[in-house]
Length: 57
Image (tube, rainbow, N blue to C red):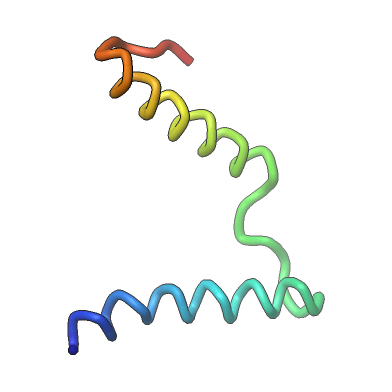
């Protein structure tokens, strides 16, 4: 089960950070703009796989 523990640890850290953020204890690690750019890239990757073609951003 060590493998499961290794995978869960980053999720625990992420949840802890989210809770701290929601309580106003810390500032966001990334901006909303950075998050949106990340989503654009992930969306382009999915479309590229579906179409079998390059997707220009």
